Image (cartoon, rainbow, N blue to C red):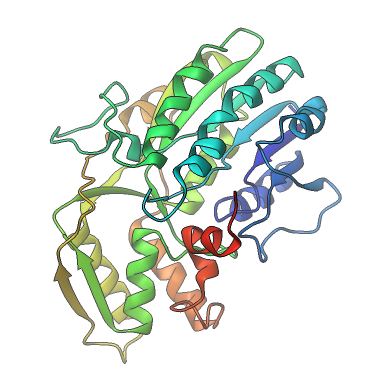
Amino acid sequence: MKKILVTGGAGYKGCILIPKLLHAGYAVVVYDLMLTYDRGLPKHPNLDVVTADIRDTETYCRIVEDCDAVIHMACISNDPSFELDPSLSKGVNYDCFEPMVRASRDAGVKRFIYVSSSSVYGVSDASDVTEDHPLVPLTDYNKYKGLCEPILLKYQSPEFTTVIFRPATVCGYSPRMRFDLSINILTNHAVNREVITVFGGKQKRPNIHIEDVTDVYLQSLEWPAEKLAGEIFNVGYENHTIDQLAHFVKNVVEDEFPKKKSIQIQTTESNDHRSYHVNSDKISRVLGWRPKRTIEDAVRDLCKAFKREEFPDSMSNGKYSNVKTIKALALV
């Protein structure tokens, strides 16, 4: 495989993944509506950036024509139905999915990598949530992520390898930063307010470092097709309660900023009841992959970025929140 199309490649994870793909020698096409992009993609002779909507099947068919693989990350993410038009989420995250998959197969794409989400599990009391656990979505985002999975798998064939990854909540530094993800939110507040507000606290949440999860997407182009074909893999490992995460953040921030030795943790009620303990043994057993970084590493990386003053308006600028950005743009 030589040419890779990455939908959503200008987003939070894309701005970490794309340089890795280029460094590995791939030609890369970023297919992105560029709604949340402000910086992060390198200038490179092997990089083409196409500003387009994945709902535009005609354009997608043309762009995917000479690509060997697709990494599909584009979506409306973290979209509470009371904040965004549900039809928008359905249109972007679900309705256009099968036309994209069919167009990719018909264009001769050899491998289609779908980035789903571990949030499709919703709420579970199971000690370990494995890939065969029932999906109990609580939001439109969870629901449509899950509904796309069987659509992709029915196109699996010897000529068209399909694989699904269900990553945990991603954390850590990206030049295209998001401060609407749990660890990133907690770190932002610890550094800039010296107060961490915990909503609920007892919910269990899996997390994954952004460098680790993008390594998985890169390596998914190299792993043998027979190990990926028609498979679903959790990508998590670190499972902690929100309260535990807050204390991890507090300790690292106080270490990185010695003057902030009295960061407070305040607990309040939450209407977000998602709680699950994700088991990621399968990806280790089948593919031999394990993460190299920790949640503490992610917090430390963010602290270093704050020291460089990369995000001086991180508490107030809506560009760091996908939902706020899309609401401001009135995307339909």
